[in-house]
Image 1 (tube, rainbow, N blue to C red):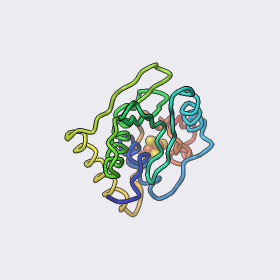
Image 2 (image 1 turned 90 degrees about the horizontal axis):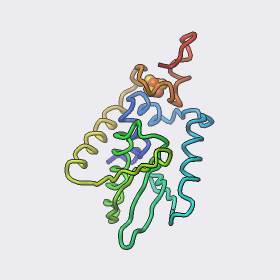
Image 3 (image 1 turned 120 degrees about the vertical axis):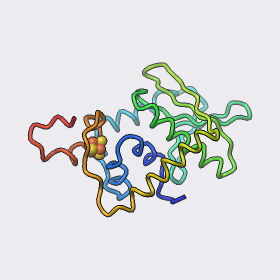
Image 4 (image 1 turned 135 degrees about the vertical axis):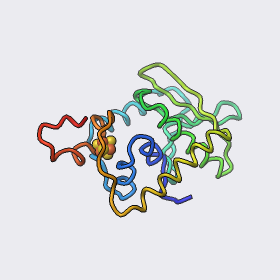
Length: 174
Ligand code: SF4
């Protein structure tokens, strides 16, 4: 696997191919974007009493890793379940990378604002789905130019929206 594939790229791959290309080529989104800040804040404050550990490993920034007895649980905290499939594949990527390092873990998606949790398991079917996404990313990033912007519902909240759509006067970003 190429080392440039990260959990963030996996998530983008499920949302917009242009985002994947821009991020892989280190064209950073607006770090001051209020939605990015909100996501970070939410992750910080949501589980203050849990046995939380936030861990950064190559290609991975795990929101939470908790030990439930002998079992490790990796949790990703999201502000909404709107892009749940993208978040699920992102957690699968973390579980797969940990497995490659010899750590078997279970995954969880947490939506504190919705008071909801979703278990994520790395089984044969989900591993196939993950591998397809990784292959898609590898094919995409070697392209010399980014795919053109395509309007999606996500454009409105995307940190790249100014970059993609600012030339269009009065544009509401989708
Ligand atoms: S603004 Fe829209 S087209 Fe541009 S990167 Fe974001 S989601 Fe993709």
